Amino acid sequence: MKFSARQRRPRAALDLTPMLDVTFNLILFFVVTTQFASEQQPAPDGLQVDLPRAAAAQVLPSEASVDLTVGAEGTVFVDGASVDRAELRGRLQAAAERDPNTLVVLRADRGVAHGEVVSVMDLARTLGLTRLAIATDPESEAGAP
Image (cartoon, rainbow, N blue to C red; front, side, top):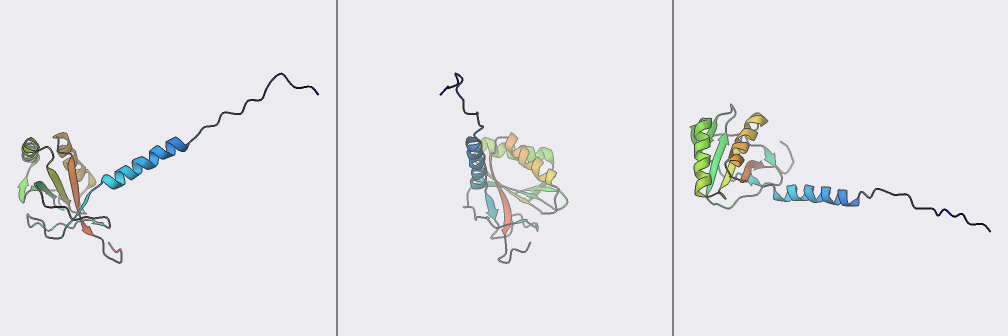
């Protein structure tokens, strides 16, 4: 019997398991760290805002926070007072200087353009306020919006 001098090598295969593990860990991280604040009482500024609904909403403990409200027409309110972008920047910067761990609670009307909400969130993050909670209404039992 004659054996060939050349031995067969197994073909190299791409193992996707580590990539899938990392992907699922990232998804789990973002799901677990996202905070949704449930509105059990009207907004402290008294504005009527039609909040989006979320089944995973939690009631946040009362602590020092900055309450931002974005009305249906895009007007921004800080602790009940209407502010322009310059004043919003000043108030958020003052809050960040007092305590960088200050919680920013964002109440945005569901009809507001997504870009408006993102610009407010981005401004807070740029100034060093990294704790952000998005206020929502609890989802009804039937799941209706």
